[in-house]
Length: 88
Length: 194
Image 1 (tube, rainbow over the protein chains, first blue to last red):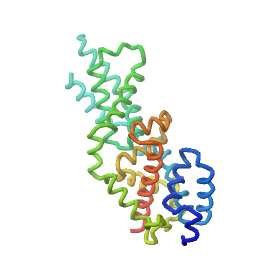
Image 2 (cartoon, each protein chain N blue to C red; image 1 turned 180 degrees about the horizontal axis):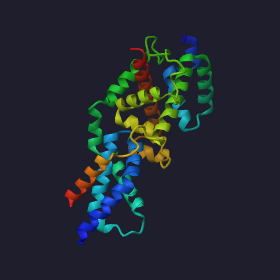
Image 3 (cartoon, rainbow over the protein chains, first blue to last red; image 1 turned 90 degrees about the vertical axis):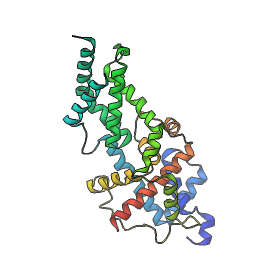
Image 4 (cartoon, rainbow over the protein chains, first blue to last red; image 1 turned 135 degrees about the horizontal axis):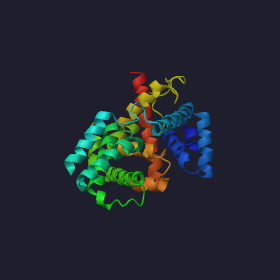
């Protein structure tokens, strides 16, 4: 971004931080305006916002449905039972 | 039948009945198989030692989950958790340094930084290869950052409690999320464009 734009808009680091803040809480009106202006003009930050959402979607899917290992194996359960017996 | 044999029969039954759902919950909270397995074992050990205090006022399942939730909280507070960041994960200082290297001093993206280059077809929550890569990249995050990212998807936790557990303020919270996402971005783009 050039110098003049920097006066008007957030730097990318700040803008992408506000992308995360926006997920959690309401932005102040000025923050919201400046962020929107930035993301409209800055493809890299628009890209970040898109990726951030894809990460969230993928990770929320993961936490709802553990991959590959949704359960303990029979061996792991038996070992657990043995450990409990030894512990008294 | 002795009291002790009784206890062991009961616990064995509980392992068969509840260990899968306890494990799933622990995995959901930690996104880490061995940690989840350890937490389940600790839960059953605590249940073994505290067996006499279980009076059946709540269901065994509720009781076991309550113990597990304590164990999860302990885990995130313990020094083991802090030390466990050493193995493959990077520490927070290193994470901060990597994040800073992605931007210029003015806070713009570095031209040489990992920008673009990913195709939208690949970058999708429905693409198993992408999700697998994302999971691997999650493992490399500083543990606290990973927890900050995953804590959001847990229905029982409001942001205040997450901040308490992590010992951070709300503004820290989105800053950590921001840094974590940047590391994930770098990790994913790096793996795709070696």
